[in-house]
Image (cartoon, rainbow, N blue to C red; front, side):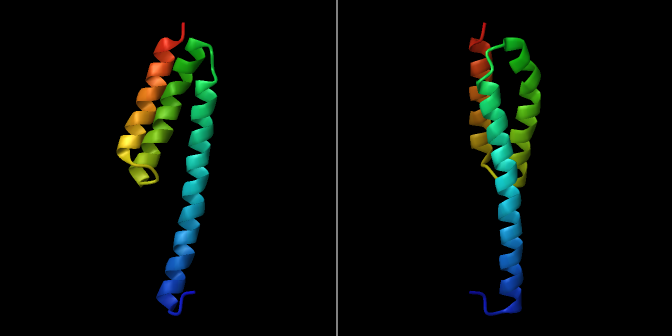
Length: 84
């Protein structure tokens, strides 16, 4: 347990950030899952920019690595292109 005021504050901040990051990461994962469960190409293409923006934001604020973001976006694009 933290023994100094600064360490206690740091613990509070990191816990708040962890919950914040967890919320946004889970929301994005659900959006990706919903997009990949879509079988209509038009609907998938319409939702793709929103999901891409969510992924980019996670990479920008450091929740996920930029290469992971690129891989996720690439996988989504491949999936959409395979739909007929």
